[in-house]
Length: 270
Ligand code: LER
Ligand code: MN
Image 1 (cartoon, helix red, strand yellow):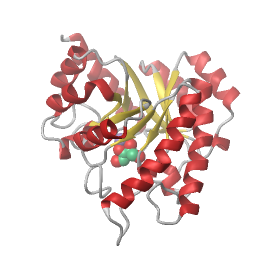
Image 2 (cartoon, rainbow, N blue to C red):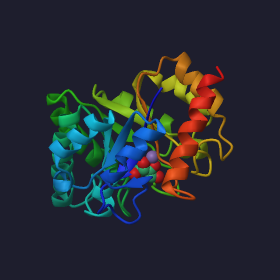
Image 3 (cartoon, rainbow, N blue to C red):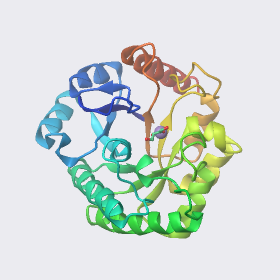
Image 4 (cartoon, rainbow, N blue to C red):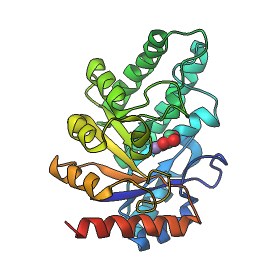
């Protein structure tokens, strides 16, 4: 399996859920044995593309996913917003992030930026607005041959698309070929009926997976059966990346080390 770990820029939103902050950590990430990074951005001007490319070559890391949660938290723009100007702003920012992703052949994650169902709006209105934005963005991403991955999130963090099953059914209905599921085991463990069964059912449209244990600590520190998860991913021939999105506790280094060492050990036990 290929593992990447979440990292934000130095100026990342203080509450952004990333393990590391700042590209100065790339060396540590490589030394720990990761294959790549998931980079969290809130604007295309956040990074110098050439510098990042140089560092990735130097440390032999890949950049498979760019995440966009801070477009919601920092830029205050999202796709279900009742104001079309705000939706337009969200689409423009994410188009910029797709351009950055194109430099690396990375997928673009759509998580908090999808927004929530506003008070007074119906589910259908919200989904209609979301679909309008995703149609435009997926068509834009297709020009660069990139996927967008749509993340499910548990009921305490948002008010729709809680489970992989819900996102999977939406994607099947939307029929957008470069829109895939972004599953997150932490959220799945709260919302999906069965983890392995769900992965198996939606494997054909599974684009990316976040790993964390049931308590959001590093794998091995909670009660998710990672051997069963790894086995099913192997069985269905999952070719995508696994991104470690864990709480950086007791500190980023320890959380990153525990995660990769535990997962490699599980893989060796097969
Ligand atoms: C938040 O809980 C999460 O899983 C992130 O990947 C979304 O920004
Ligand atoms: Mn996640």
